[in-house]
Image (cartoon, rainbow, N blue to C red; front, side, top):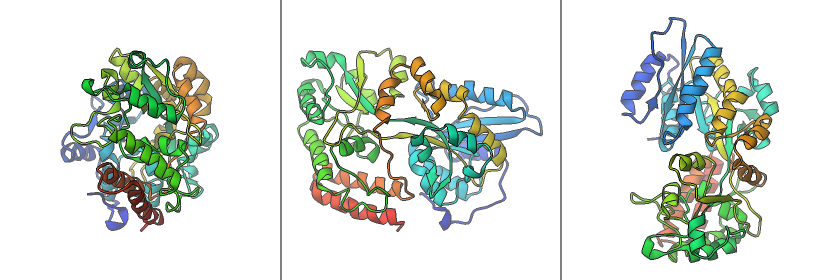
Length: 432
């Protein structure tokens, strides 16, 4: 059950980090996967806990654990960092619960969509007041920096940025007589139908869920929206005629059998990243992290293109993570040092090689030169939008996804579902 800080009494008498690590291992039953330091630590050694969702299917987590953290520890004798993997779906609730108990990790790699909520609930340090943050603020890209700001204050260090672009299977396109990826939404719809081969369980398009992250490129590019510009109102936006048209387009593709099982989800659903190299999806949208995964799988017969344009243009979603220093952490000064190091060129470029685009301006040219496929994502970021930077975003996203599930199941019409979602989103944005 997700707990809010204002619903519990938080202990300020923190237990040792060793006890926290043991507690975490027992409580989460293996859901947390850590890389601990070996050998006996000196009595003066400070141990920091770093909770994250770095992918273990490729080298993302191991690069952090075995390359970046050892370099930080070498430069900062007396500080040890234990990285702990937490599944994305569990991370927010576990961090809130651990904070309520007075034992949060020192640093949290937070989804950018959570920062406003965690700041409002008093779980994040106002890092804008920390000495190290001034240089970070000056060097950060505007988009990633904006995700750390709430009410004029900064609550996290920008960690990485990304967006989604269109992945297309070259072999399936050639077999269907298509010479290249679609450049417009209309072409996307037409190509999805052409590329669908029911007898082979081959779908023209994969849409990896009903959440805003996966649906926003379609909604925004077709002129729809979720809220007003300052994230205070959803009615009139989430249920606008343009949003209804965009959702109807996807619903019709699903009804026609041109979208795969990933859209509705469920136990038997196949994600786009899993089904794409197996020829189950001819197209889907994903971020730069998919490339290292496909390299590991020796799959290369695909292209990456900008998201197709609709009436509003080609608009994708700004993604990424921010490194948040826990307000109830036991070693805030040392946690600041670690968060600052994670924005260094060494750390940023090491993680850029694993699909995590740098949040810092100074690294842009080097990462594109070292990783040419970033060029498409760099271009896409020029028109990408951030999701509602509001403490109510998580609830808004949940309400949207729930109503979309009802729409896809045929339980309500598109208009009915979006009107309900908008009303619920208004309450979420108002904090009720």
